[in-house]
Length: 230
Ligand SMILES: [Ca+2]
Ligand SMILES: [Ca+2]
Ligand SMILES: [Ca+2]
Image 1 (cartoon, helix red, strand yellow):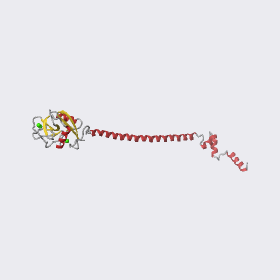
Image 2 (cartoon, helix red, strand yellow):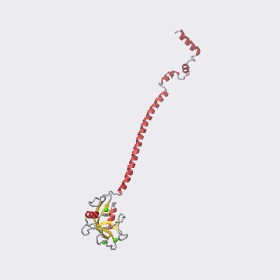
Image 3 (cartoon, protein in one colour):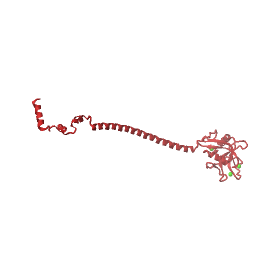
Image 4 (cartoon, protein in one colour):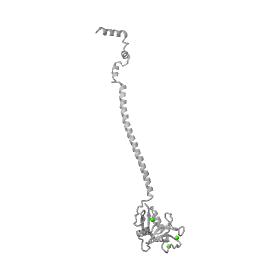
């Protein structure tokens, strides 16, 4: 041991090493022997807790990932919203069904190109025929033109015993004022030369093979066609 080291020991012994802060701490520390270990963190309960916290943080991160999955589900919810929009479209379909698609109706050559028709070869009163047509969204045929009147006669092809078909035109409110089943005035009906003879109760229009009109009684039974506009 050199004289300088000896001198330090001498100083320490004389001053109780009070000049060294670490030395003083070591002296006063309850677990002075483990303080050196504390310095590197090993065995430090607090450090271990910090590590666990870090793990917990990673778990939280994972939960954030899960949260993003939940966000994705919210996106799915928006998809459900989109389906509700589709549902509205489904609601719109009954509106379309208001024109029933004219199911069971067909185009008739020479008749109105914008209409479809359905024939009924059952002898029926005018009122019964009209009800039959409105039951599926159609209406008792209104032959606006001679061409349509003739084409529909060929389409219905009524039995020769009564070679006429009902048209959706009547003058029930006022003789001589012809109104269609759609509520419109039918001007200048193409009556046969002897018609309309307006016998009491002759409120309804029959159409002959040449397209000419006859006023006639509801209690007659005739074949007919229904018209529908898609
Ligand atoms: Ca028509
Ligand atoms: Ca009449
Ligand atoms: Ca008549």
